Length: 143
Image 1 (tube, rainbow, N blue to C red):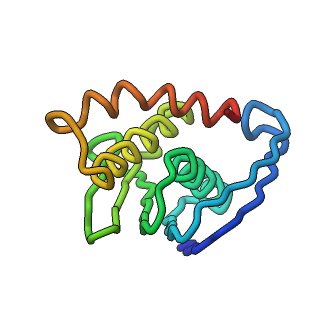
Image 2 (cartoon, rainbow, N blue to C red):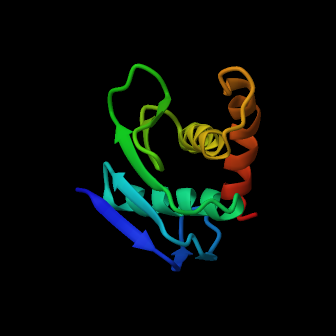
């Protein structure tokens, strides 16, 4: 199943086991970004869209196309590739626990931010590694 969204405002309610059982209400204003998710399940596509929108909003990033592929088989935990002037492909392995999978997605989104800002040191890995769990925890805790 492919979910293709161009959105200006999304309202999400998280109930039950999502986000450690806390009920959350979130508003996102990710203007003119397109997020395409190639999910394993419908529940996962909503989570991925919410995570990506949260990161883009937090970092005031607009005009992007992000294609997120959730993969059963991948030779690493995640990859990111610039495939167009403002289009990026991200792959995330689902063969890891939820915290590590969120951190991997955040890690790859940091690389997108580096490309958008044209600012990184070396290959950009040090910054992505340094920020991935902090960002994952901030997202999970609703910050």
